[in-house]
Image (cartoon, rainbow, N blue to C red):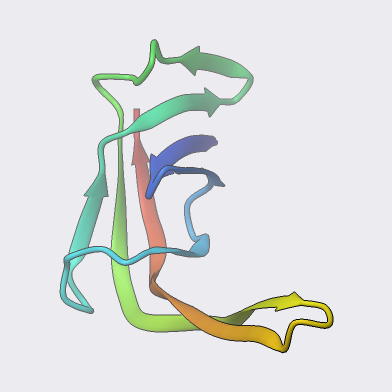
Length: 103
């Protein structure tokens, strides 16, 4: 059994027991979190697709920890002009462990 959820404007395919890094959630570490935006559920070959979401489905997950992602570097330069600019960014992430899929 697997499901497709949407969080942080991104979609993830999850099964029970999976661990994922999603964009920062406003929940303390160790607390449960429920994902309500379930787009698709597949249960032993029986596929249910939402339009756009499935109203009766939800995903229960435990928040493991809050982390920061790897540093991404943006570098701008104009040749022969003496202009260069370097900017770094680290995304705030939350690690969640999927407990169960309620369909």
